[in-house]
Image 1 (cartoon, rainbow, N blue to C red):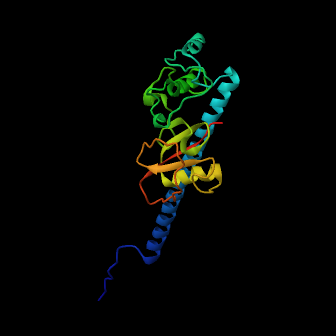
Image 2 (spheres, one colour):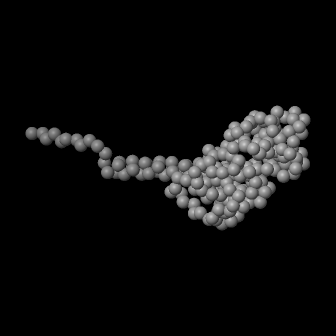
Image 3 (tube, rainbow, N blue to C red):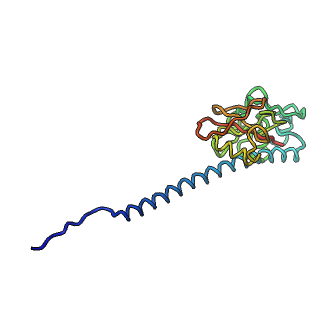
Length: 221
């Protein structure tokens, strides 16, 4: 009498092991890819900050005036469609409380961004106001300007809504990770959007497990 052997269906241990190895490789590739993207964003923030500095310096070299400080008649006389100007006193008024709004009682803050766009150093509408006048960072935050934020001397460029990891990366690229608030890159942590203050904040550890965000600044010149 012939015996009929039953065939078992399913995966062997070797097949399961191969699948697990493939899944592990895929997960490792995804995680590595995410970190590469994050590094690219961090470098983009630093590039944006340096770009604002280059535009600010380039404007001065071309017109022998601070962007935003010239009176409105001077700007419109060039054929620009800007809406505000400064007082031509040689000092750019950039209150820290107005860093990311590009509006408020001091017109020179908004005039700076309008002048940089009108002169071709930045793209966008020359007469943009408010948040539309402020550039956006690759990380999703805003790029603003302020005078003397966090104890820095003179006009500075700031970026809001940076994660702890991003803030650490920006600090490392600019200052070599010497610690926040002791070099050219300074910042504070809090709810976004966080306008900087004039005083130098205390040292705060970059804790990547926290959901709070940083505002980082560096001098324009």
